[in-house]
Amino acid sequence: GINRGGGARATLAEFWKETENRMLVANTPAPLGAAKESLTDVAPAFKEAKASFLRQFLYLGLRDAKNVVRDKGSLIARFGSTIFINMIVAFVFQSVGSSDPYHWTTIPGVNNHFGGLSQLAIGGMFGLAQPLLLSFPLEKPVFLREYATGTYGAAPYFTSKLLVEVPMTIVQSMVIFFTTFFIMELNGNFLYMVLATSLLGLVAASTALLIGAIASNPQIAIQLSPLLFVPQILFSGFFIPTSQIPSFMSWAQYLCSLKYGVNLLTIAEFRDPPSSLTPEQKAMSDAIIRNGDESLFGRNDIHTDQEWVYVAIMAGVFCLFRGLACAVLAWKGRTLSA
Image (tube, rainbow, N blue to C red; front, side, top):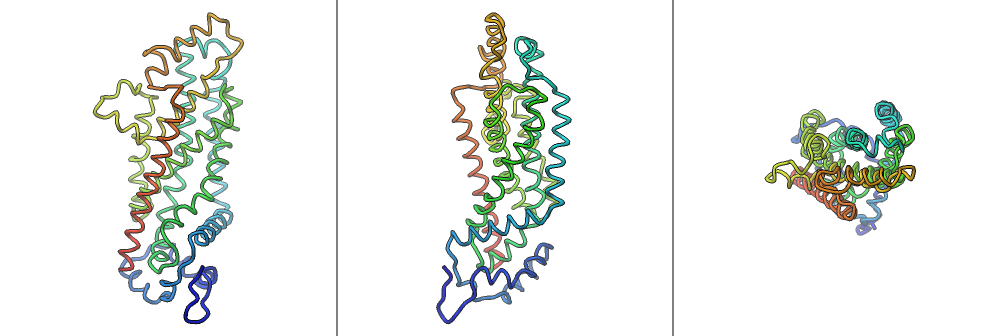
């Protein structure tokens, strides 16, 4: 709770209410020197006032939720663009996952099938990571000022963002698959594919968060965005099978969440071939999709018995980049208050 020594003190909520205008002004980046000088005038008593982690977490999460609800233009643009782009994808890959033997027993058909899944994963990664990549550099000055004055810590700030980020990511992933699943006639489990894409989006957003923490403004973040997206696409297995990537570079795939998101979607989609296939067609489908080094699974290093390994790798990358972003911003906040 708030330290009450030395007479009555305002609560953390009251302090934020009193400084609401200051936080709004802080959205406009100011020179570090000016910000540093202003810190001595901002409620110095609150440097000693320490709220519990839970209280900081809840208040910060509530503030993020209110900001999302208030910014209706961004919400409309985010979901409107998601629907529009995925409608295009759905009709380009229309019926690519149908029970037609062509999509299961021929190499061109299976490649088209896999291409549709890869496009869903790539589009999901872009759509789920880009909002944070563009918005976080604008939020950063607020964090630096409030962190430097001791309003809250870096850990509750970053964990509280998940209160809004996780539900938004799941809802956006559901919109992606409601738009595409039935038109493309996909064969996989709907909920499984939504959750796999959500995890992919959260990991990609964590990488975007690190880039946003390093970048001083949105323009620099945009210039750095190829570092997030291009390696992910190269190591996804769509343009070149991962088995053909030189060994001295193949280690990079372990930092690329798109590769493992594609793996999970591919396993879900091709786990059970349509029951309408004859035994001969099922044998042919297995030979093209999963059996042997030259099959789809073999060329892209996909193993059906390693689903949880892929999830664990993505969770590890998520924690790594979130932790690095937290450390970078905490260091900048300490530098600002020094």
